[in-house]
Image (cartoon, rainbow, N blue to C red):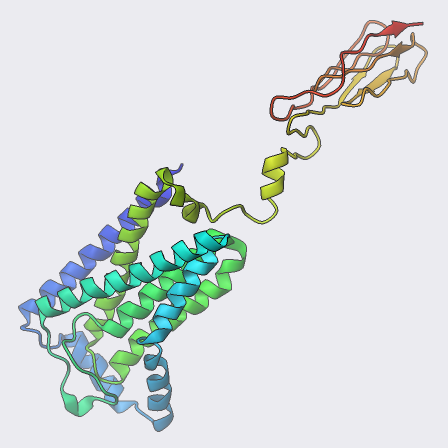
Amino acid sequence: MRGAPGTRAGISAGAALLGFAVAAVLVLRHGGAGLPVDADVRAWALAHRPDVGVAAARAVTATGTGPVPYLLALLAGWLAVRGRRRRLWAAGAAVAVLACGQAVRYAVLASVARPRPPVDGWATHADGWSFPSGHTSTSAIAAGLVAAALLLRSRRAAGPVVAVACCWAVAVGLSRAYLGVHWFTDVVAGWLFATAWLGTCAWAAFRFLPSTRYGVVLRGGPRDGLRDGARDGVTDGSGSGSGGGSGKGRGTGRGGGDTDAGEDGVEGRPSGGGPDARGSTGSSGSTGRSGSGGSSGSTGSSGSGGSSGSGGSTDLV
């Protein structure tokens, strides 16, 4: 069903939005202070900070902002479709999804106005309000765009890259809590926000784009190996067409004869002792006849409305 992907995207967006709303209400009810789970995660992070762990977390968290997410968005749009113009349009759309998501997040950030954890536990620089985590939501949106582009292009090859992209987004989010600049619920809210935003954009795309010339973005362009096959009507075994059809019919009768009838008018000769029957068929999917009085045949499928050959006559010797 064409509407099924859009429906699933809408359901995912609604569920994530509900979770985000619940988290926001809990934060507001606690006056912006850390929840019990936030205190537990912060205490664990402060107790497990070797130098190598802090260095690794800083390296990971640096990729969650700045040019990296936008470069990934450009790459996602470029990979989603074929054709230079389509790729330029898709890349611009992917960057717009990320940028607009950032604008909405800033609005939510200012509305909730949750303070960050105490500065004495910070292991990197940070500023601004805390809920939801900007690095987390930005990296999650970028990873989601890459995953969507690869799934549109080739589902079989997408698996490993999608897994890596998702692991990167999760690592960026966890690094924010590990470095002490965000509460853990800020990170969870960032993932929920990204899921809700991506789901909303996907629902809108499936709802409105298919009726426009940009609907090819959702189809991913002609898939590998299918462009020529769909154009020429090539099928396995029974018929091919694009202006001409072909068919094979094999008939056997009680006299033991058999006949092959194809698009080129192949003669059929009996293999048994029955009368000789010769015929040439021109139209696609003709039925073969043979033997004395008995006939059976399978009709071949035709292509896109054409036929090849001329109607043949049967000569009995």
